[in-house]
Length: 111
Length: 453
Image 1 (tube, rainbow over the protein chains, first blue to last red):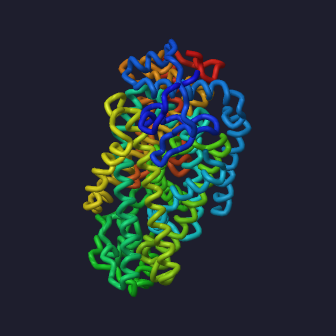
Image 2 (cartoon, one colour):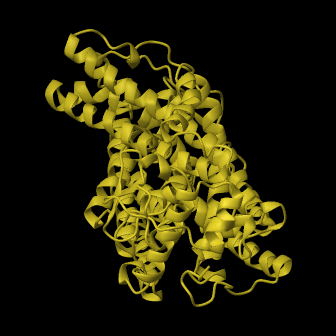
Image 3 (tube, each protein chain N blue to C red):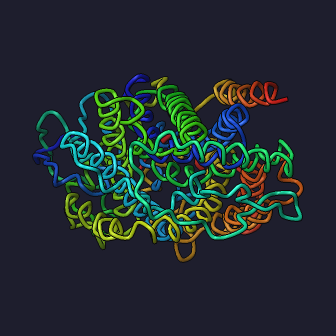
């Protein structure tokens, strides 16, 4: 999707701003909202059930489109990114073992 | 985006505010230094283990704040119920208390620099109810209950006199501490002491649970979200609490704004106090950021037009007023926080069951944002009854095992704690109710990470 509308901070103070700006192009403002580092162009609106539904909910078009854009990036660019994969059973097991180990050591000293 | 080191510092700044010292000092009411440190290590490790996992994993993976990610577990309206009751009041109250603490540190610095006695050293805060100095001259501040666990035998004595620098060290309080400790140890088993101490920790969990997911979404990787959250909070908290405990035992006062300057000297003391004052402010920053996000997400379109700065300002109105009533805050608000901790523990159980078991770490971002207009996370009335009912069940169990106000405990508490069974029962209850009410046993999100619209 290409864009023709310039995005400003105020455009993103709603729902889209609650998502991490995918990739490295996003920046966090002092208000905790995400803006894009480069002004972007926006194409003519295309039929998109997701965006249409958000618009029917009363969301501003620019916010709905930004939300859709970010989701698409997460869906495509970050889909195979190891940093955003689910925690593996090994990850969870190591984490829980470390927590349990800390407790066990402390209990051992206590006893 | 935050790296491992960045996020560790964020969590450290969140953890090391004044309250950590004071909570550490409250440990001195129950145990000595060695047991107190060990109890703090165990209590923090247990509490943080499930809180961090519940709050950070989904948000980091999908880059969305936790209140959106919780729509599956509670429904859009259900999340709003949590946000506008437990979360909003809790975080407003904490903001007010942190502001008072920052003021006290700043006022102490000002007093040192100008050579004037700092008015804020007057012990006007009910924190002393939980600190050793709340019991001046009392060698038996707590009486054993039939269950073998002590409860405050009388309302805390309010110390109205100002604490001067030359009051330190106050040997009478140190002696009082020794008597106090002996009394406690005579009537209580070591494990009861340990678990009581752990119970104090859950008030802090009430502060952290609503914050962590909104911060973790900005971590670069899953490991950069998980480990800094746990280690940053754990190490910084244990360190600050240990200092508070040691200070309470040796100086009779856990609040660093009182003893830091006379103990550390003008230069070092003022420097550390300045650090603590700013640490309170950074904690407030994390709170207001996360809570305003939650408010915006949970209010539908009602507050969508309100600018971020305006919403942040609105958030601070009530906390600002409440800073003029610190006694009310410390007494009544802490009572609320104490019980809200039981609910938030159960929320963690439901969140863990929902994300890791029911949905197998797969969420549908479009459906999450569609909410009631979608299909996957739409519930009758916007409320996932399974989620809210399970939170209630877990909270009731928590209070049954351990009443955080009276300190009355069930016999099982000494062996299983209150937090662990609460998380487990809330999780099991959620899974069973989801199956019964919605016929959901497995994830409907299926393979696609984010479905096509």
